[in-house]
Image 1 (tube, chains in turn blue, brown):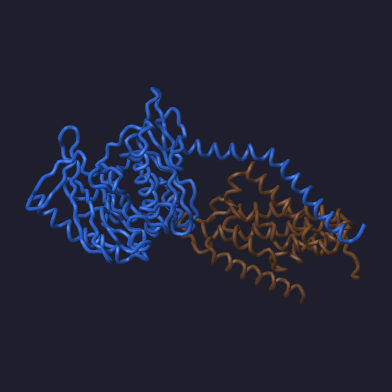
Image 2: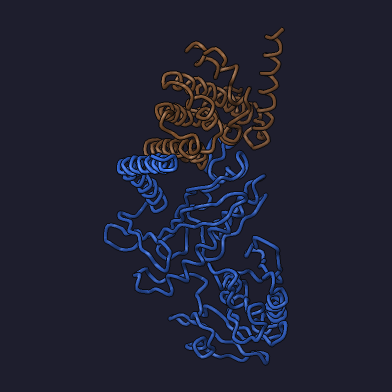
Length: 359
Length: 202
């Protein structure tokens, strides 16, 4: 046998032996590992949906939804996995919501590797001997009809969706809030687009407009009112109560006129929905305000961040992690002029429309 | 050729004279990364022990059939096999430890202690000696990592193996469980071992 044959033979044989040994081992360990993962998920699910008798997982538009049923087989809760970046690690949080998606039942932090002793307090705070889990417990029964906001140095109000940030771990606390907010907004849209899920229609303060940029579709069923020379479109529920006010405004962008459909809360406290009706910005740059191809996971993130945005004061632009409760949004880098134009148009129009309408 | 060590000597050298971390300064990556608590350091040590002992035994048995030209790839195949076994077994039977050690178990493959022992020792010695050497080295490694983890956990959290040691009013030095704490501990431990050796030599 020549030398090179021996080299090949020894290496091949050891690789084959090693492969077979591992495949054989896998037969025993794989069921154990997946059983453990199932067990962890099951325990987490029953902890975030404690009132559900049975929890079923459903696949909707690439998202895994866990639907909880009570003993009468009625949906009584929905759980979803919220994922996003924390201060230095990926956060995976299981969020249990009631069947109307208006209140959090409980959350459970499944995975985080934040700074030991500081950021890890989002999961476990050893300095609080009485309740080390106080941070995540704040989310129990938290109202999420509007975006969750975090506060400091005062008692949070659960009804307005407030939680207290951790001193020394503000960024991690904020990240938890952002990740959960994004997941809830996302799931609301998904559920609305998929009525076949059988999930009870959402009764939230933020009733959404149809997912369309066509004015005719948007105007369907709305009542037109003229006030102070401005046109308002009123959205009413079955009892005739106004649930939203929409209007159309426009202004110049980078190279074209941007026409925006804005739908706000009846008291002008927050934006419900924003739609760009017309624009002719630079293709692939300015057009990212409608469809951001640089962010394939969520191409409409720029417009989406206005949903639930508080507009008591002017909208401000921040570099990262905007807080919707403070009216903060992010601009698109690479499309700064077009995206800031949208915000400028809104800031110009909102106070004027507010005064005219409330007059 | 240097005279052969006695079997006892073969075993004992890994504990102090050729302690991989403190004397040879190898395997520092896991030493720095996972020793933020005593239990993590200890479990890492056990995972390395399993891999090192099994690989050394295997390589020593195969030492006459492995051609010189492909010895390193063969070592790596053998080591990777045992690391994967250790990783799978941990994940299946000790999921909590597996979660805490995270990506560092698969990285044992490139831990230089293991490859160094195969190249320097197991491939040239009988299985009995190879196992003794591997046991000594890995016990030395495990002890060092456990001590490392205990020091960092004691000062950084106030506990050892999660048992409260420090008095209630002790304010933990958070930095000790963060990355800089690993370097500080490493420096002090190597300094201490050098000092002890210098004293013994006198």
